Length: 331
Image (cartoon, rainbow, N blue to C red; front, side, top):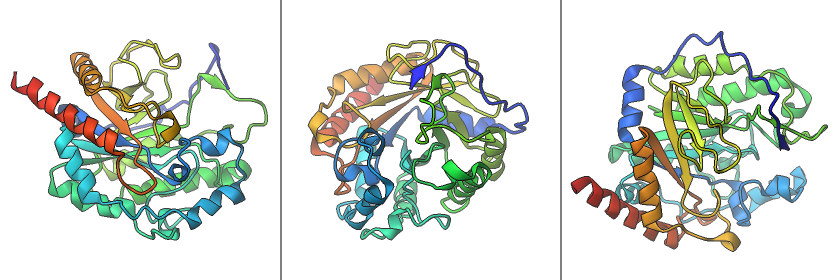
């Protein structure tokens, strides 16, 4: 795919709702959250785009479900680590581009409860986070490489993904925010590339109203690298500060919505041991401080291992970041 200067964005002028002031203030005041890219792609440790980059056929990719058993996953330990690093909320990849769902969705069998692990990750995270006063936020990919209707019946796919969102915002308590991914209007895809090409309108206006209707205080934003659309409550910069584009795919335009900075602790987003390169806690603390100077919330990403735990190097760095954050707060 290549970046283009002549592009259009989906019309969301029909969106009627937005996040309530209470929810938006709570999200911004929380200020610092932990993001986790984790799913079926973690099994071989080559990143969250492995299915696309290595042209893995769906039948072969689905076989990963037969071996995915992250027996070390412990929601209580994840929540405790968040307390140590000073994070106030968790952003979890409920469904990434590969279409695998981390909850017991009734709309697909390509999900965590159909693996040997057999447990609903979200259902276990909810009480662990609530007991510690921590918030839960979602990542959800609009793009889907494995859902058949994405390529063959676009209205059915829109109904499918909105149905999944209805589950996510009905069955797991209060959700602080959601970031969408996979809609990138400034990028052009190769002709015939079914991995990316949308079959029509995403009905973003309907999606945003669906979420705000179910949870009026939920903050909605979309990692589309353009100015926020109507119905969105915040603007996010991926690996950049507001108004910057050192990464090459962000917009330098700053809108009038709340601002969010999304960073990673390691070299990538998901578990990839061959590219393992944890940033220094001082570097992350400096980025966090800079984001706060911009008035932006800061989300720091780690990629849990296929066993279900956070890599020891990342965990050590997170604890040191927490110490630096507390030290900065006391000064």
